[in-house]
Length: 220
Image (cartoon, rainbow, N blue to C red):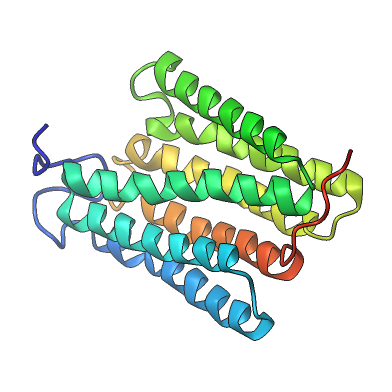
């Protein structure tokens, strides 16, 4: 693989160069703001290391996405997708364990199901399906299912996760529309995906900080 092979996957990019996607690059500020806000809140509450790890991952998501929308090549694409993947699986494990008190084997099975669903979504969907957004659908479904179970349990974290799931759904629409609307919106809509996802991640982190400080005892 040529790690420096250029990538032109977004409507805003019309040519090579670090500044060819200014809105896509600048909108990554949403991730940094979410991480810094969460770090301040976590410091005040004396949060546990696992929560700090989730916060750090959000900051790295911002760095990886910034790299992709400036360098726009194969290595920066990997730098973009890897921290996102780690956060998705890490937060799912955290939510299942700390919010829903799942045993570790149930957490492992749930993560395996998410992995299988994501793998299948990437393999069975036709090229260009949802502009590559289809791979995020299993994560969205997982977020909705967790939020519904939290609602059923009367867990106060459900409000954050329900809002995050709803905004995540809307953000996927803007990610999908980026190439479709190029002729109508030359700047594209991918930058809105960044802005909304910064809010999504802030909601997830707030739930972790406020309601996930200590692991509850697993049920029988």
